[in-house]
Image (cartoon, rainbow, N blue to C red; front, side, top):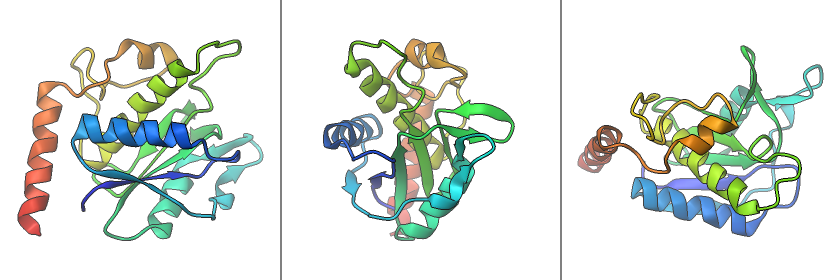
Length: 181
């Protein structure tokens, strides 16, 4: 697979600046091409009325069905995401798979004056989730973008780059993929 598709699947109108920011950060951090994907459909069957949240796992399955088989896709949304064992997630990805999703819903706080903070957080979480698509697991290296983020403090604390070990793994994945083409 070559490149990453960034697809707005949120409820509000897409923010072109936000999507371009994510695209550029993915390209810079992962050294892979990324492009904005346009589509009109939305993952309507992923909403859980009881929780008043959206199932990130159902969204992943939907993304994998709705995009070209050879593509990796990052769905970007503004809805609140969950997995059954957690009250919320910033995002989720298929480890070594094709689909990932990330949400802006919990990346801001009431009264946050600077939208650049949300953009920086979204960029980190986007690279983190796409890192999972490339086979990276959570990393214990302090500051690595692949560190686990249980809350917004964790997102702010970690860096915006892969550590050397994670970077080396991505390079090996990219080399293996080039070798199979």
